[in-house]
Length: 207
Length: 175
Image 1: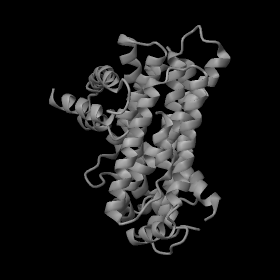
Image 2 (image 1 turned 180 degrees about the vertical axis):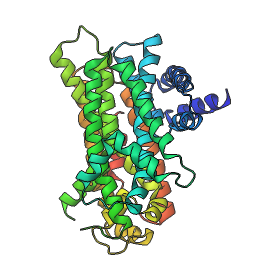
Image 3 (image 1 turned 30 degrees about the horizontal axis):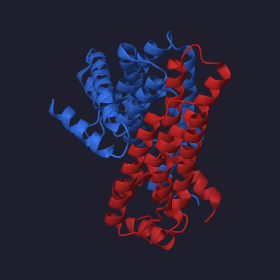
């Protein structure tokens, strides 16, 4: 596979000053590609074509470093083989959820605020982004935005969250709870961030 | 410059930092050896949180928000450089960000050094606990190489000169 060869060469170039860097790249890439395939195979079971497309597209700038971080920590703990691939794929689902919902907030929720409702503070934004039913209602109400399908975008994120929950909650309940707490903290930051974007766009940022 | 203002802007840039920090904790909890004493496990988990929070927050500043400035100014979304420049400027534009960075050359160090400090503290903590470090050296090197490359691109693109003392600190960290 050409892209895999180039990615390995590039990574080896980046790590040329690190003792043992080449070996780490070799070992890591095999795990990364296997985990990526596992994730994609599960996503391909999604029946809605647009939703599936959004879920598969969630591989932005942080997916690779996040997978590297996951693999590094698991390997340092002595995990190898199928379990290692599994844990890397699991965290890819968690990141998939975060990155797709981030797109939904920026591309759908923010335009909705301009068109329909003016949020008064970040608390109102937080109440919206933590309520999937409300988000579904907004997605239906807003219809299509610049070739985006809001409902499918939202569903793609929710289905990644569902897969992650299924894979983690039984095997690693404590770790899964840590994830849920972090997601709530993330939404608080996201609410502030969205509110500031709203004020910036309205030229109304209080300083 | 008011320290609180910078701190609040950094807090807003923390979306990725938080993902990195908690991903480290979640993976550690899910994979730690059962024989590891609970107290040591907690200390390692905190060290990993600190290390990866610094790494991913640094990425957020040097990669995402630096290189997306033009697009973000146009969309008026909360780019960190743009928010920092907003402290002194009435108008929000690429020019106002350039002016701000040129008249406050130390701002990059003030914003990025805390990320490097976190990486250092986390790294030293894990070293003292005997945690396997070779992959952390790899993470430091990746972040350093990307940060250096992206900040150079930013300087060339926006004709600003950035204080890079934080970068030397990062280079010295895991050698």
